[in-house]
Length: 493
Ligand code: ADP
Ligand code: LRH
Image (tube, rainbow, N blue to C red; front, side, top):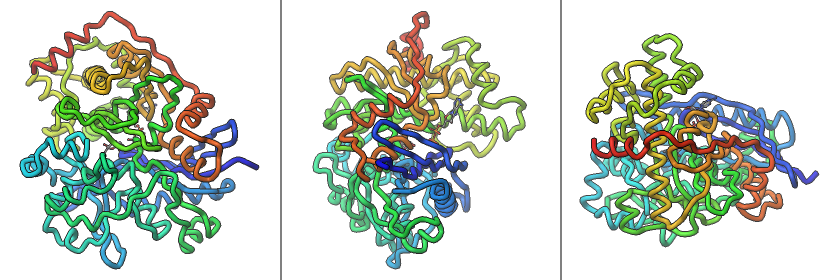
């Protein structure tokens, strides 16, 4: 048959999943083979990823896909910026750190003093996030691990290496490191050298759609697959894959990839590296087929999931997501709004005093806003504050790029949050089209399918196929709430 069946490994910071994707000339079918929880693990004072555990779950998931039908390829995408180091024997040196670990505190400011924020932006085009790979590596300078490192692999590339033995750096994810030159589209080796980093650890770049390699014999045996099974490079940054899976048929669309993080922006042909874009702190990440993801990282549903975690820890009854969202829908709107991108919301809480709800309460108090006292009130505050951030950043993106989006596509797990989707429509004044919630896995499947011969000439063809095979929810903007006033409240705090 002319259908292609692949395993899409899509690793989010909250959950990992392995999907079976089947692409035919006019069909696109996605089925969940395996899902597992993910999250940081605190050990010896640091926050790590359990990367061997993730590898085991990847194998279990792909094995399940292989068991249930033909398997033509594997593609892996994950959250950005985090990496593992290999020693000269090709072994992993220690556990990869989570970008929420505190070792990068204060590092960016020191690096920017040395390099200059203007030059940094001109070269990398990135938003200043404290955990950009360059800052993680500067924090690791002088450590035994970095001194022994031969090769740096971003997490999807590390997992691909364990399947195939091949090393490389897929371009969309490389573009998130702060060590990639967005103009020349090569590693920024001069920049790396200037900040004292061993740039020779950066492996050759590879394109989405390129073959990573075929699975090692030992891996094929573990998977119960054919020995020559290809691993295909996809947009290995999950957000790059999610943007491929945005079912846009409109010319001028904005998107929000809504998961642990909210990635809010536009797809462009060229980076916007103006002084205004730098001051607005917008990122220019690399997309599939040479596109640019011009967007803002917003703290996202992390703030809510971390709150839910702390309420569960405190044994607060009924504070589960469906209850909270139902309650929040009936709660008074725009009662408390906070700056949801306050960097103090980044790390996980470690005590009652640093729990996410406690930090939200502190932000509200500082801003002179009513302090939300119940889980439902905190939830409403988070959702209103997210919608307010989307409004501000989408407007900025449009202005900075000289575009006028007519619709906002919301993809990712957050597309299932209908209250947030409605508030997003209200706040932005634009219709919201929500879904699919597994856009990243779909983008992963589509790029693999094309590499394996499916007739999907361009992103438009891929998006058209998603649009024709997936049901979307439409939310029309409602008037009546004073978003301008709410924005002014946050800005003046
Ligand atoms: P990631 O890929 O970063 O792990 P996801 O795209 O899976 O994140 O999105 C996870 C988020 O989606 C959760 O934190 C939750 O807020 C939201 N979500 C998932 N399912 C639902 C649902 N049924 N209703 C509302 N929100 C949901
Ligand atoms: C979303 C994401 C985002 C990055 C962050 C580290 O999962 O990849 O695009 O900035 O994680």
